[in-house]
Structures are given as C-alpha cells and as structure tokens.
Image (tube, rainbow, N blue to C red; front, top):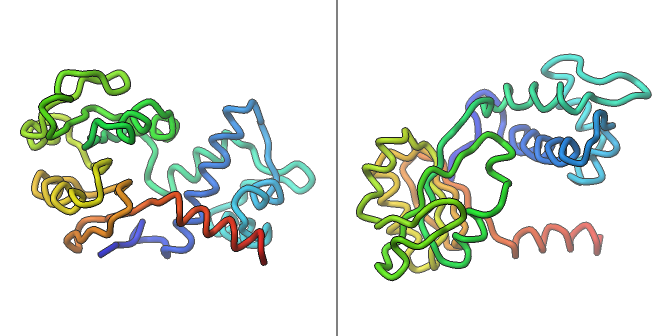
Amino acid sequence: MTTGMADRLGGGVAARMAHYLQVLTQAKKAGRSAITSHEISEYTHVNATQIRRDLSGFGTFGKRGVGYSVDALIGEISGILRTAGQHNIVLVGGGRLGQAIAEADVFADHGFSIVGVVDSDPAKVGSSCGLLTIRSSNELPQLIEDNQVIVGVVAVPAEAAQDVADELVRAGVRIVFNYSGALIDVPPHVTAHTTSPAVELLYALYFHLA
C-alpha cells in the first residue's frame, strides 16, 4: 500500500515538484544561476506550460526571457515540499546496493543525512559502508530513536524486503524508500515508495518509441 507524498498537494503535483527540484539541484551543481521552463521540460518530460502552471500556483518566480533563478526556486520548492532543513535516514542493507546508495550524494543534495547502516549478516557488521560503519540490525530500533530517523531505506534482497519494512515501521519510521524492487505493504500512516531501474527504463522507452 502506497500513500501520497503530501497532504496539501495532489500526488501528481507533488511528484512533478520533486522532479523539478532534482533538475534544479543538478543545475546548481553545474554552476547554473538561471533555468527556463523549457529546459526543465527537457529533463522531466513535463510540458513547459504545465511547469509554469504548477509554479505559478505558489507565486511568481520567473521572469519572461530570463527564466527562473535556480537558487530561489530550489528554496521555494523545498518549502512547498517541506524538505527544507536536515532529515535523518537509516539504511538497511550493507551489500553492493547499500554501498552504492551510501556513497552517492543524491540524498545529501536534498538535505537528507544517512546516520546509520545496519545489516543482519554478522560478516558485514563492523565493515565500512560509505563513511559509516555497518552495525547489527539488532541496533535498528535504538538507532532510529536516538537520531529521530523518519526515513528508512531498504536495500536488501527482494525476499527480505517486507520483513525489513515491518521492522522499520515498528521502530517508528514514517517513510520507507524501497530499493529492493519487491512490493511491500505498510500501514496507512506510513508512506512507501518503491523504485526500480526497470520502471525508469520503461518510462524512457515510452517517450523514445512514441
């Protein structure tokens, strides 16, 4: 069961805003100070008119002929999506997928900090995962409580994903980000999102073949 991204936005608007924010963040890292709705459209496959309509619903951000200030729009959308500030994440799974997630900067780019990595395999406990040391999965509840973790990332084999999601929910996590590709069930008060390279590829092929 998957819940919406934000109570005050429709799911479609919130999803598009998140895509805009990702493009803007990468534009800032590339040294860009301004960006147009047409440029955002090229990276998100959202019509430029729809982009302007989405953004105009929250204020006047752009200038005709110039585009949007990258820094200003990042601040505005972060506020709209309530992502401004620091949010803590715990990563479950210290294998190859977990290592790749821990070493990527995608979360840090948006103010999320991975504060702990746990694994049920004793052979992995004590080894490095990114800049962190892998801890035993038995420490998961205390890790979540001590760091006020709201997001749990599942990077385990598909057959173990539901059990891990259940553990995260019991420990108080409110958002489960599932990289296993398996379908997971969570209670109504918890948001679950499953990401899959296959889904992204199918989406890209649709636009290529259309």
